[in-house]
Length: 209
Length: 209
DNA sequence: CCAAATCCCTACTGCGAGTACAGTACCATC
DNA sequence: GATGGTACTGTACTCGCAGTAGGGATTTGG
Image 1 (cartoon, rainbow over the protein chains, first blue to last red):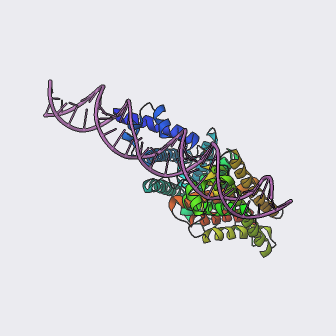
Image 2 (cartoon, rainbow over the protein chains, first blue to last red; image 1 turned 90 degrees about the vertical axis):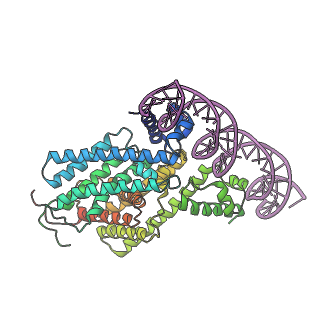
């Protein structure tokens, strides 16, 4: 790794720790440069402004998260051949993953950006949008596989269902933080799993109302 | 209304408009006092600091939102006697309510506070927590009525299910903003409605897998 | 009429983002 | 071994915003 590349990474690492612990606003550049052991000028050499730092953090975070999702789906695929079971396993794994995070999920960066519109510019919002669309695509594919074999018992749009995974995660994070009960997020995911199960699991027929 | 009371309300009104439009951080006190037609000293006479303003805004917002939920549940109760139908109608009304909001839900204040921990102190977080617990209690009561008549087809915790309403709303708002697709929130609520329906609607029995 | 309550006015501190710009250390290339 | 690019350091600013300090004015209720 080139010298500059290394410093840039050091800045991002230091910044990420601080941001996850205290929020983006609360993290000052002065503080970052102290911990990253360089000067303010050095910081601005690498990042045009705080926006550029946010963008880099988000992009890096999205990459990591995408990899995480991929691994998770990959594992679910290895564990069974049944597409519904794969989906259910994936959701279970997801819940466990989030459950295991020490003080709850560190707070999805996407949501952080969403709720601080002023701070971030078009580029950041675009990166955000792409990330969410990526999740949609991923989970949509998972559900596509399911409907190829199982008939849903309700007329749901698969894109919307795929979005529900992200939606429940994001909402679960907000709830967990608001309630100061870290386990809430995983619980909510398990409820979504219950829905998916109920939606696709075969049964004889509905009773008349 | 006393004179001071009136000024205080004027400040809150002006601040609320600005905050919903641009976010809390982006709204400066200088700007508020100009639009509210008073001086900085006048502002600080009414609010100790910006935190106190946030607290007042949140408390007022929670009151309005609680009233909204009450009205909504009240209407659902008037429309039918069946507790499941009441729940389904309530969720449908909720989706419509959010759908009708011009540029999507103005962004739930609770979530805003959650994602800017630095800014807000213990009091604000406590108010937040109380609000969320209030929603839980409300929707929990709704589902309690349902299980008194209908047997759920999956072993779900009713508090968690009640939380799912809030969770899906909050997550839906995040998704709507991230995707710049305001309709997403209402769609997600309708998916939750589909789950509730599927969870409680009577049917003959599940087929064996 | 008097004393709170409700402001106004001016001036100031302190912090953080960002700018300007000159100078430096190191490394590769010709 | 001179040249030039990359990656910084150091100093010294500006500007916007939160919050403070303190005196003065006005309005209102008892």
